[in-house]
Figure 1 (cartoon, rainbow, N blue to C red):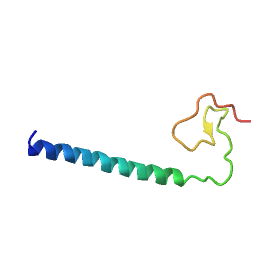
Figure 2: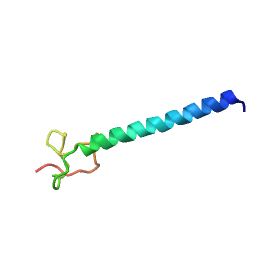
Figure 3: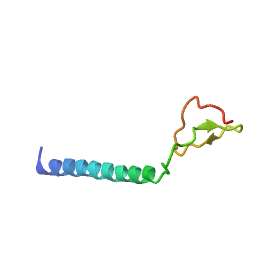
Figure 4: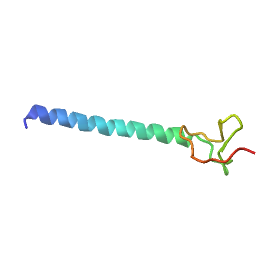
Length: 67
């Protein structure tokens, strides 16, 4: 291993750390902005198959039908 390889490896390592930090701060800001005052209504599936009361991009499996 020479100095050039060490510099390349160190820059990749630093890049991964910076990218992880930036993505973590983005996720913290994104989910901290959700309204968490009080209990949220349960997630449910509407008659047309769309999700109701679910702010995140992923959806829970086996959610009940909306009343």
